[in-house]
Amino acid sequence: MFRRFAVPLLPVLAGWAALAALALPQAVRLPVTLLFLLAGPGTALARLAPGRGGRTRSVVLAGALGLAVETLVAVALYLGGWFTPARAVLVLALLTTAAVLARPPFGRVGLAGLLLLVSACGGGGTGHEVWNTPGARISESTASAAASAPAPAGDWRLVLQDEFDGTALDTRRWATCYDWNDGGCTNKANGELEWYLPSQATVGGGALTLTAQRRPTTGADGHVYPWTSGMVTTGRDSWDAPPRQVFTRGYFAAAVRIPPEGGMFPAFWLMPAATRTTPPELDVVEFIGSTDRAQFTVHWPGPGGQDLHDSASYGPADFPAGYHVFALAWEKDSLTWYVDGVARHRETRPERIPDQPMELLLDLAVGYPSAPPDGVDTARMQVDWVRVWQH
Image (cartoon, rainbow, N blue to C red; front, top):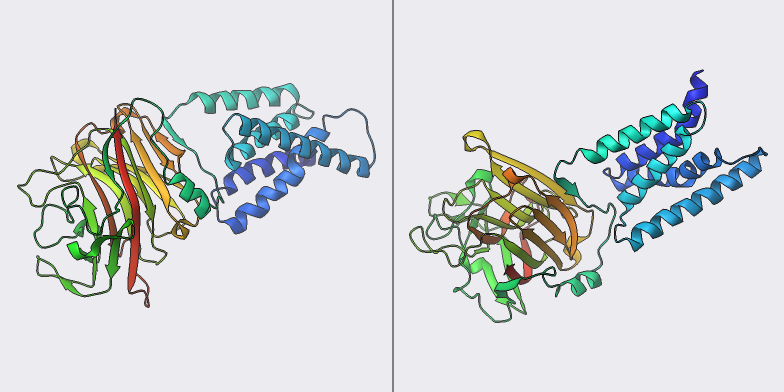
C-alpha cells in the first residue's frame, strides 16, 4: 500500500524540492533542479498516455513529453514577459502535481485537493511580491546598456541629476556627512568602524568615488576609528542648516559599482529629513556581508516606535564586475525595487509605505556585519550617476 502511493508521488516531491532549492547555494540548487527537469514532468505526463509498452518506450516517451512541456512553459512565460527560472519551475511543479494526482490511486479527489491548495495560495494576497532569478549572472555589457535607463513610462519629471562629470563634488547638491556631527561622522547604531570625512568622497573620471581606507582616525567624539570612508547626502551641513533637497515619493536611481573586498557595507538609501532618525527608512540597495546579493529593505515604525523591517534580495550576480542600476519607485500605495531596469521586489502594505520628506544618501560603511579580513586595507564604491524623478 505504501509503495502504491509513494512511487507516483516521487516526481511531485522532486518538483517542490527543486522549487525550494532555488533559494539554496548553487551546489545544491543545480543538481536538484536538473534532476527534476530531466525526470519529473516527463514521467508524470507519461503516466497519462494510453497503452502500455516496454521500459525503452516509457523512457523515450517521458523524455519527449518532458522536453516538450518544458519548452512550451519557457516560451509562454518569455512571450508574456514573466519568465524567470523560479516561475518556470513553479509552473512545471504544478503541472507535474496535477498530472500525478489526476491518475489512480489519487484520481479526482487528489486533483480537487490540488485545485483548492492553488486557490488558497493564490487568493491570500499578502501585498509582498518578489521577482528573483537565482543564479543570474549580469554581464558588464548588460549593466552598461542599462546605465542610461530612464524612469518608467508615465508623467515623471527629473528633479535631481548628477552625472559626476566634473573634477570636484558639487557641494550645492551634496553634503559629506550626517548632519548631527561636525568634523565628520559615523553610524554607531551599527557598530561601524569608519569615520566619514569629506576627503573620502571625490569626483573624477566621470564618477563619484567613495574610498574606505584602513587609517586610524580620531572622530569629533574623541574615539579613534580604525577606518575612514566617504558618503554623500542631500541633507544638511550642520544640525541647524536646511537640507539641500528632500523627497516625498519619486523614482530614485543610481548606477553603482560596489567594491569586491569583504567587510564593506555599501548602501543607497533614504531617511527622514525632519526627525533625522529611523524608522521609517527605505533602502534602495544594500550589500550586507555579501557582494553577490543585492538586498532591498523597508523599515517602518511599530507600536511604540520600534523599528520593524522586511527585506528581499536578488542574486547571486557578480555585482563588483561592473556598474549596475539600482532603483526604487516610491508611490503613494506601493514600493517597487529594480535592478538594471527589471522589477525585483514589490511592497503594497499601507503601514509600510512612508509619507514624509526624506534625504537621499550613498555611503560606503565598514565593518558591518563583520570587520574586513586581514590584508584588506582599502576599498572603493563608485557611482556613475544619480537621478530622481517625481510626478
